Length: 158
Image (cartoon, rainbow, N blue to C red; front, side, top):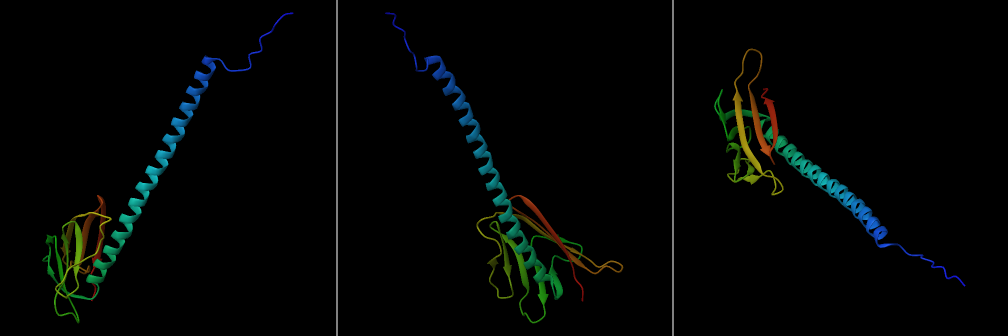
């Protein structure tokens, strides 16, 4: 009687080859998942900065709406603080950059931050553009939130 060997298992080389192929696929999948998560985090950070910047820009527009006079900066000058007089408010309204926050004093003598700890504000600058020809005076505001540039120009109409 002849005995036949019936090998129904895998050889060591086959196991090593399949393990290597599985490891490469796993590394590729994990790399793709990491890139998706990192992209989502960057997108979320940009949305937060945009939301906060839009709020700050709306507040600056509110400050400049119905302004009687601009105290600081002077006509043709730039500065890091904006100070204006508005009808019905005794003290001037001021906007400034302080400790990486953009702050507003709405005529009470107390500054309130316009942004949150989710963003870092830097390089706030106001430029008082004097009237010329038929153009009214304007204020240009420029700032950075999380190293993203934001700008607005508000014309002062009477």
